[in-house]
Length: 556
Image (cartoon, rainbow, N blue to C red):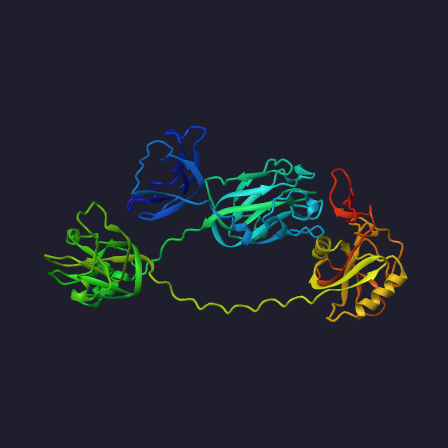
């Protein structure tokens, strides 16, 4: 039994649609109806003669089955390769997230921070505005991937049913913010705090954008983590022979049958429309294309003429290498045409043979060499050097903080500049909380402290001021009573002001509301009184309150 990462299937050259609708199954039973068997993928289409990869997201099993449902079907496989290895990565971690709206500081990026912490109050979940119409969340993976699974973690403290009916959509379009992309799966319900895995219908989907879309009115979308497991989308190798330099041993009749006709992109096998190259009748005629660099050749396709004398191609050899000794005819062989097989197209798998020159030669007999098209599917043996970008200078070290004693507390002005929510987390991690003020004397002493700061301050600095989301009441995040105010005389806080508050860093230190996302210096405090309750963000089902007090903290 193996942990299977990828299955590669090669289609026949002459059966363009023969594998359409086939299914790849993996399990430990020879019957796909076994409950333990897993469908890895549904093959929508593989172009004739090409090989496609199908990621299977580390499914475990002994048997790999290709099943073609339907009646009067013929299943023909030129090659099936099964690769086992490591699980696919969570590519959402390196993406950029966005959402239809943001509640407080619950930004879209919180859902791709790598943490499944499901309690909204801990600050690791995204959250749109409440009671929105058709809210959505999106991650941009920065490039297209073949996506096999999406994992979604629901919030665990309440409101698990809010996610019911959400849709996971995947694609490369940003029409309607990406919500018109094909649907991967629908979320019927995820229990509170749980992580569910969704595998796209058909095994995998390709796309750059992954959306979670919640249709309907008065909806609220909260996501505590979204994980996207994928592999880079497989792109077919290009035809590197197209319009490259060519030469042949001789040319029949005139330049309209010259060697360049073999790489002009015309695949028509009718010789009379002058779409094919042709030599004169001679012993051992040959044709050659110069790829102008050394390539790893995966496959070579030759299109023979179709109107007459098709047997002339018999015995033709495909040679690949870097030597021009004897016109390149001593290079290693990739393959030889030994039978007509009723088809004008012949494809040879060359297993990444390396070479600059591709030669077609019919050795040992006097004949004409007619080639209506030669296609060479390859990648550069040594990729072109990419000039590395200069290493950016390290970010400047934040200036050291400045502290003083204020009303029995140690007050610190922090030189780092953060948004309000990050400033709150910084203070609670390294000090105790954002600053609260309780008298004009404290305000005056703080003014003296700011005058001693040796670094340049932003025009405003954050304090622990916060407005209730559903009213005009302001309070201290430290939980201490607000018995002193220093708003400007002409400022009346209301429910339309910003929900975050700070003070001017210049004269009078007046309090003002500021956009919560502004990066400002901030002031922390430590040494709180015993029993003081700090304020935490939470949302209670069946209640209009979005701010509550919890967790009594004791001075150590």
